[in-house]
Length: 340
Image (cartoon, rainbow, N blue to C red; front, side, top):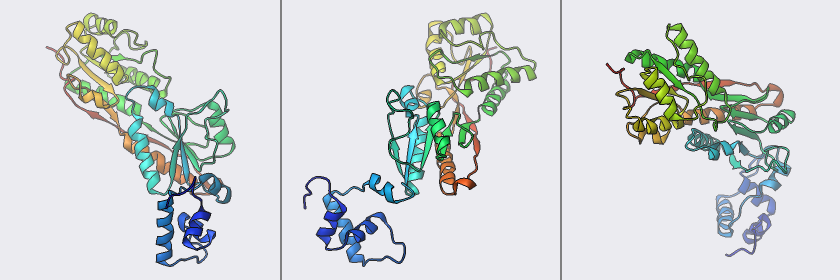
């Protein structure tokens, strides 16, 4: 039963010998106000729709329904613009939960030279922002009171948010290293290529505060951007006798791990290495890296749940929530006690 062009509800109704309204209700699952059809009619309509390759017209449905059942993800340039970041699993978990609740998901590549905001040109019921979007987009979502949740970033006064607890995680990483016997602990910050983010200040400031509370001295170089892993190792390990290094993320740790070989610095024999972000590569290098890993899938599920809470209540009853996700230390072979 080949279809000419894009099949319509009217064509399906003609093939089945039923009204357009009956086909529309069956395909949209709309059995309100006492509507019902015999099982054989239902099966015939869905079978003909499949054979014709029918796809629902979301734009048309948006005109007649208060809900679109579509969620947009924004900020995906963050996901694709930085190697092996934490968000792939977050997005996947959020999508699975939303689809399980009957929602469709869309992602767009915005053209901010043409459009004022990153919002798609069609209506959506809500938005999940992955780390960041343009200030104009936040302003527009606040203006129209569109439900939205920001993952690991900042939003406006009416958004909910979910993020890793970087302050608690940094404290726990330092506790772990001190328990191994380390007192000369360095901190390797981000590179100039890293995006500005709250985690940069939170991790660094917690490092300083925790060392001070324990009467320990920070290693010089903790407050700068990392332009050369080789120079950092010479300064921190060779000149200042650091026995452990906390890295801002796995990208920094991989740079240090690579350049340590050039200097014949053995990890963890000479210096232990621990980093944020438990990404796939961290378990594949030699030695495998001890990490502070955010529970990415949990972060995605929480984001989806927070958004559905906003969508499913009247606008004047919506409340905002900010959830912090605890991170876990994954111990591997890059950390040990300090050298004798």
